[in-house]
Length: 201
Image (cartoon, rainbow, N blue to C red; front, side, top):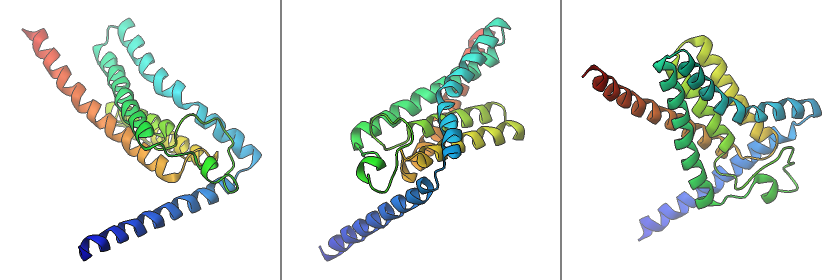
């Protein structure tokens, strides 16, 4: 019983410490806001959906026009990653119901961009990292991987800079997006193998 209580107290203490670190880091990032920085990072934030949906749509369209099945599969893989990432992200938002930082800490955090429902995890970040990971797995070249993850990291940072997400929201969003893409990549690889076997029969 004593061990159990000690474990609970230790867990509670770690949780409180982590929460303090979360908001303290956000205060530093959000507190460095400037007008020009705000314009730049609002632009970065707003590229999220167009890139995440436009890229796979473009691959699928070009693949159909050129009758290139590989491009079509790549586009479908990226869309599948977005779907998995979106379902997980939305489920966690509704299940956890974490308030936005500017709501919980109105005197410390300034909101500089539109924000939707709950805070945890960051949907923008999960979408960006799902896109970056998918394209990196499909085209494993440094000149694809580097800009893809630089962009995704920029999206994640923009959510903190603009005061709409905690660092932990962004971190978990990045992990969800990355994990969803790895899952989609494996699933589509198996699906493609089955499809090719049927074509040969």
